Image (cartoon, rainbow, N blue to C red):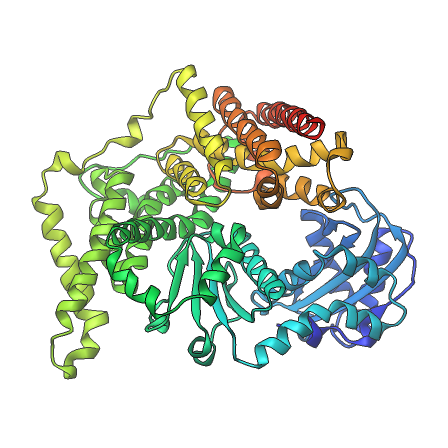
Length: 616
């Protein structure tokens, strides 16, 4: 969905001042109605205000993007307004808003509003564009400024002849995916290299590579930490790296792609050591696919569980008969969180298998783990079942490739799942019971305070060491597994540690701005807002540019935050959310204390090291 197709000259309001937030919203809704985007102003306003009650859409940096999905909207549409005097919009950075966009999407519009938001956000990251939009003289001038970068991108894509093509993807598909894409695109532009980047994000595949794109390209860059469709790149030179390298080393990757030749292709045969690394990397990617697919499930589980605790509802997680699943017939509200956490283990197993061998693998792993769910199979066992099922189905696929073509249609939906499930049932039946039983629900690991502090520090430091790389992802995965094992404090330590780096940078700039350049200072409020939301990627450019003065202090501060959170016993049953989930965190006052204390320590280290560096 293209902003240029949505925003028209008659839907832009320039140089109009409003006295308050509601007046701004009324003005923009009137414009939507005037342009025939909506049929009922009152109903649409109710939807807009309901969204504002969740949290202000004043995103900071003088920008607000109110939005809503509603049955009164005819088709996806956008209106814009400039208020040079500024208006209080309850923005997260407390600054007056001068540039407002209102998005309207039909009730059945799916993720259209997310697509528009994503495109707007990328364009509005440029301070120069924001300034020029506020000073636009005519609606046409406003549209030209807003779509200037878009025009360049679209003109490039129409040619279908790119020097390099790339795919970026990460398990959550929220930040790293798009940061890597933006980094590759901007670096390629500076180098004079034409590039097209496909993103596999939370809202699906965007900017998908076509057959012509791939055929013309000299090489393919895959910067991903999860499974990517690779069959389309057969006979192409492929550079496969973690998504973090797409963010940190775009120039190196593009240079490799441009200089790729047949001699390098032949040298691949001599590098047998790398094969083992790739196998390990594949296992890591399959595991992370399971983690990423499990995140939204655990979010719902955690929120429901915490609400039930707050309402004083007794959560009888484990009231069932060891010998049979009769408890399922008497399911009630109190059993739902327990049921969710038990099925999460089965789904984790199935998602891992799906990454290895697609839908047949998912089916075999799901039903194999179901069978042993009532035998108290632990999370490690579930992970093992996922990998064994996935690779078993992969082997069966090769075996069934020899059957007559006439029977091909029976393979994916009948022969593969049925034979795979039969073999897994035999394996799990003959396996000694003690090898698969794990009574984790009654054996919550008790740790000493010293061990809690050490574990918290290690997890916290891991979150900041490579910021989106494998070490960061491993720490996050440990937090996820902690939820499944009822060690909810692990996830809290991971989350608070991930929040710290951008907050430390924000506070350092606020306290001593002289130590930072203008570009660094311009991003301070984005650091604060995104840090509080547990989106730590805003800190990456600062940490790359100054490893000694910023990266090292942030690692220490994140470690301290993790230690304090574990020591104080802060815990949560969900894998994301940042400060927005504070009401659902146990001992929330200590969670806030952990943020304050570690931020102050981190800031002190930043200022001390940067001062000494500047004086030397």
